[in-house]
Length: 279
Length: 158
Image (cartoon, rainbow over all chains, first blue to last red; front, top):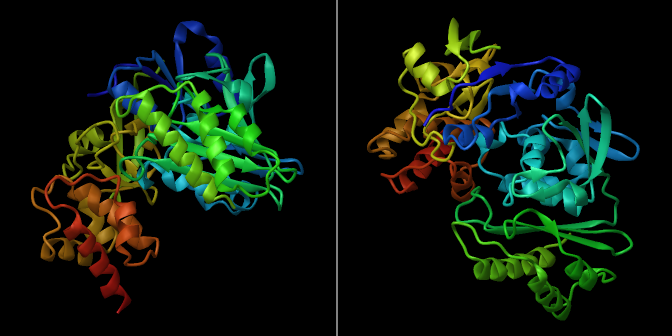
């Protein structure tokens, strides 16, 4: 099918975007890479009155290396993340994950801000943001605020970003030399949406963060698993089994491919494989 | 508010200035406004890969991109692969290895194949399969397509 009728605007500045978002009667929908929005419009699941294309604002496409963090503009595309030396050095988990997001032609268009802002339960980057304990910079006419990852994702396609706000940056702490990261996902075809997946970060002080995707209504951290894993430098078979048992705490949600019981099984499998591959 | 827009873009080396409805996707624009029907439209939601073509040097799904988003860009479609992408050897190998039957996936399959080869990737069947995993072919079983891509890489190396 084709997208329904809409109006199109392409502001060339962030204030230009924000002033459009203030006009409730326009019913604006932000367009970044369009790799989820366009299918939703073609299916008529999304019928926005006004499309606001944010690709005309160059500052949204910057990756900035600051003393404290790596700041990634909302319009940075997956392919740019994949090719970035700064990302490879300071956010290696992103470099591990990107090849599993869809296919090359999709990665050439899709953006980090789009993925974070959509909060698709099966998408990888929300789980990356949670595992890295990052922040989302959200801008509106009222000003700029930073929302921590663990308060950002609210549910399926639901975030702490309201309809008159724009995600401007994703802010990630820089990886330290002794930090380790793990990632594993299971999908039916390489690049398809994950049936289950997990991102793991182990800090220098052995604090562990574990974020699942594709198993519940949103990407989410599981405190009980993190408690089992934290404080251990290596993960023995018995620790992994305890962590798998703690995975029972997840409120599993089925989708069209798999019911909650299958999701529970897959969550345990991806957890084990991610822990085995942690580096 | 804008319902139509004038766009300027280059397709296979030829400049076009056209008025388009903003809701028109790039695939439909190229097929119906420009008349280049080599780009195929399959699923219209980014899954099948038939509409894949080059925008500013990289592959994209033309069903998931609005024509208005392509304003100012350079596009290469299957009609330009032989000349603009020097892909006549790949196209020949698609013929000789029977890498197509009905040909519906071929425009997109060629786009992904060209990108894989242009990036300097090796004739490694597993890597090729990963790279073309976003392109459905319902005829060939893929082996012949992987053959054609690997053969082209090997021939270029020799």
